[in-house]
Length: 326
Image 1: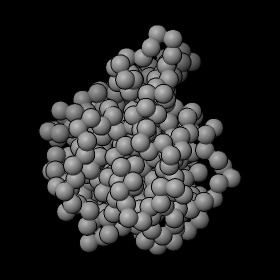
Image 2: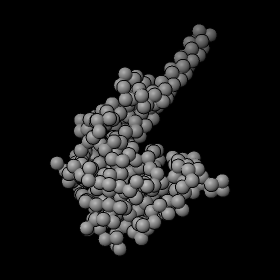
Image 3: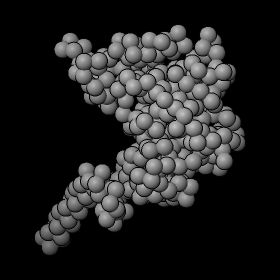
Image 4: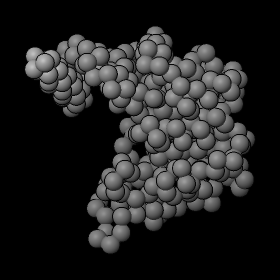
């Protein structure tokens, strides 16, 4: 069992405050964040949360750190990154405001976030804005912990990889909160590329996959991940490697093998191979979990395929008419 894996047995011992800030993380994920902060992290490397949102996950992690026997709250820092506002491209909810809806003259919930995290502000360093602007490209400080809940687009994931994953060392802990998202295949094939150098803690904690770096990661591997330097076939193979390592989440509710199979369809979809994407996705419609929770995904992939087929048919028709006209 991995060091992180031992934390699974402690879930029942965690009693978090009932009035935690709003969060889209499950209770189990919040408990795990608390346990990592309380029992695992030391503060010897940077502790980073990418995508702090309304503050629930930040609060759970900070509470654990504050109760840790080894983390020094006078010297250690928890770095919280987010837009801290609602609007296009932020993937934020108006539930992040204390009132439940944003004020008429402001789309920032940063002040609300600070009020909620008040007890931990002395060791909380807040980075508000676009990650490309708020992260330091020259910072090479080793990262001890990464909670990644921000990589909703390939553009943002490149920043995460270039400026944070590149600073992983042996002992670094990574939590991918969106691992149950088929539309985010970069999380899945990048994890496949890292498998020779990490140990997965155990079954995903609901939608979060946790792993710890156990071997030095070659610079060329990190470079290929950052530059997205893999063919479609290579990405599919890397995702298959992850499928061999995980099955269902620890509550037995999310079938990750099926989720990752649908992720493969999105690898092809984003590459413009819509026929291939639909051929991968279509058989998965019989999966009970996916049919119930990802109907919009199937509709998106089907429409892209039908549009491609229609455009191809029209193009062939025009070519035939032109040939007959000759």
